[in-house]
Image (cartoon, rainbow, N blue to C red; front, side, top):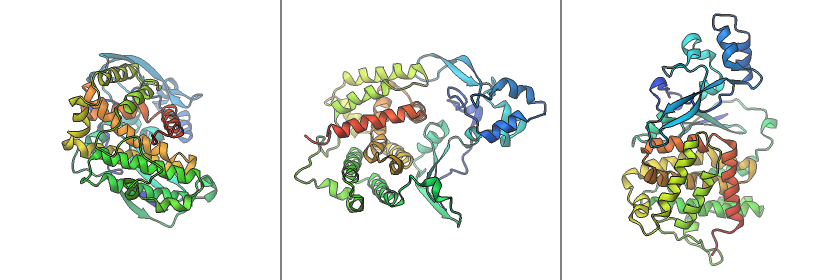
Length: 378
């Protein structure tokens, strides 16, 4: 087995009651079968608490609703759900009473996340955790993977949908993308543009059944365009204003964890409607954040690790690359328009978008439609 882990994956420490956006608030926390059995069979003093806090039919913890005062520019109060195990001091009664070994898999692992590809396990830290975003903002923190191996192998039948030859091509392509993102001699927006166009070319080869040729397609080639395919968006440093403005409708139409998020996205769209591609605000966010480029670079890298190679299961090479590219740009736009702190912008975006299958599927559908409409062609 090959194990890849982001730096500090094993050393991550939850900051518990000091967290500005607890993972025990807002989300419905699902419980794995082993933990459910443990809770149901518990005979100690905590038994009654399990009976009033665990919904065994839904395999989740019960929640109760509160009005939460926000410390950012979202609505001043939110009617929001909290896990029944979370006390008024922001601590988990289950953990403090019975210990970490009684936590369900969801609570024990978050914000850790594992992607599985046959005999490969990639261990990541999700951007929806405020403590992870604090780490990302540290210039010394690197999101790249370290790798270890052992002699264990899973049953191949578990991964019969994983075409390992295709995965090999995708991994090669992702390495090229990560390499490009690290090339600080190129403006960040141009790097993102190259990755998007590279993914577009890979998607065309995949759709034509030319998987063997995918490893011959490199990002270097996308800079020198052929005569038949010309990107609509220039290879300059500013992205397409009209495209990104329209794309905000996708965020507004998504399932929202907190209703105030949708309200904020509407405000973001209105802000950018009043600041076009010639405005100093547009130029500042995409050209003048050189002191923060390292943060946005790491955001895109993290999202590529999370999503890109998952296209081995569904063939959505372009869409999954664009989740990383456009999410990075959306975060930049939200940061400029909303008044959120940068770390807030990152974890609020990730909480609202990444932890909903419906939302991820909405993004994939949006980018699929864009591909069908030949956005890249004039």
